[in-house]
Length: 275
Ligand code: C2E
Ligand code: MG
Ligand code: MG
Ligand code: MG
Image (cartoon, protein in one colour):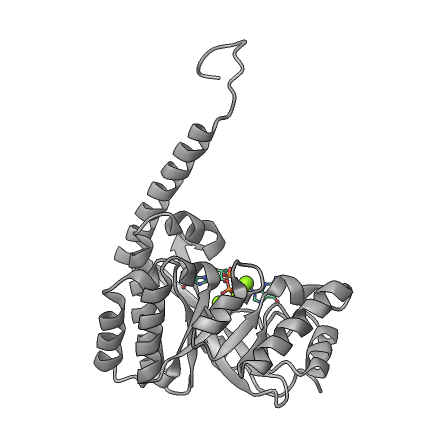
């Protein structure tokens, strides 16, 4: 419009790129502000063992508080992933998670999500080790969830870091399994303890036989490789029952509990879901 009337402007690739760039710069700014103001928080969602109903661990899901509003990661992670600055967030997430484990000994284990860049960042491993030592937190209480895109960027560096963290007792889980690329080679190359079946398959498995077959297939592969399986997006009882029938080990989702602040999370009682 600012170029005058009767002009058709074709929305080009360059426009898209510069819009993305502006968006990334804006989110880097928001992130920096949130760090300064201590406006980065977690909500915690339990992962339960299906057989027993016990809470196995919680997943920490990051949120930014901007102008008093809670902003979810879907808004800022994709933009920040385009910049190295996402490492700032990774460091915050690690430090906050380890401090949370120190502050709440009743929180047995905590899973965190790191960016696609995280595992090619040489400073990350010493940072994790330093924070664990500083807060006197045992490494076995920390679980790293990584998406396939995360490991994709630099497989050998990722492998080395994972091996080192596994050696000191941290656990790894492959997140959103089934939607990325080269799925099978990651199962082969990465010493992950568990596989999280992508929620998009789980969500509709009670209605869609293809989704159900895919959930079963991922469960079977995981099991035959000696890995535990976790189903995310368990939104109703029927789905949880189906997962129990298949033998899937763990479940997470709105049917069990939504992500909530720490005090509410710690008040969640085990064993009530399949009664
Ligand atoms: P994710 O790690 O796969 O986490 C699961 C997401 O699904 C969370 O969204 C969670 O709130 C949501 N969810 C849980 N149960 C259900 C359910 O039953 N139904 C549906 N429809 N959704 C459910 P959230 O918190 O918005 O996070 C989205 C993604 O952002 C995460 O996916 C993760 O990839 C990323 N993320 C979250 N926290 C962090 C972080 O600290 N650092 C980084 N780098 N990424 C993060
Ligand atoms: Mg996750
Ligand atoms: Mg996931
Ligand atoms: Mg997911």
